Image (cartoon, rainbow, N blue to C red; front, side, top):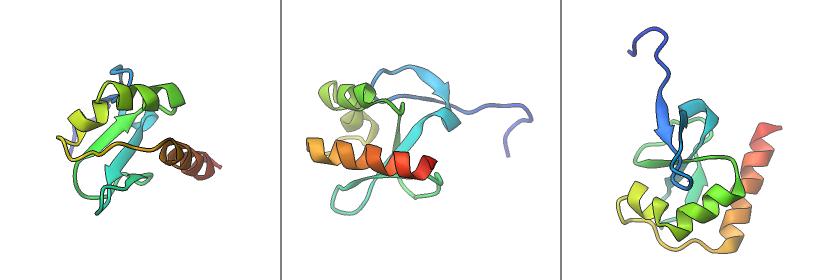
Length: 94
């Protein structure tokens, strides 16, 4: 159990800014390397955190932020995958 008043901080894989964990989107790799949003933050395994901005997602791909976060297990993501992930996030926020 954490300290009272402690706010966990994570780094965005794209812009590399540190923010409270609750402000970032957690992504995990499912079997087969499919990138999915972990909205409840309960999926097992390594996760990557990213701001809810498309630019940060593109930066994470360009600057290999996901490769670093997933320790090399991340494969290249197609543009359609980026759109799908952000569409899922928008639907979760409704």
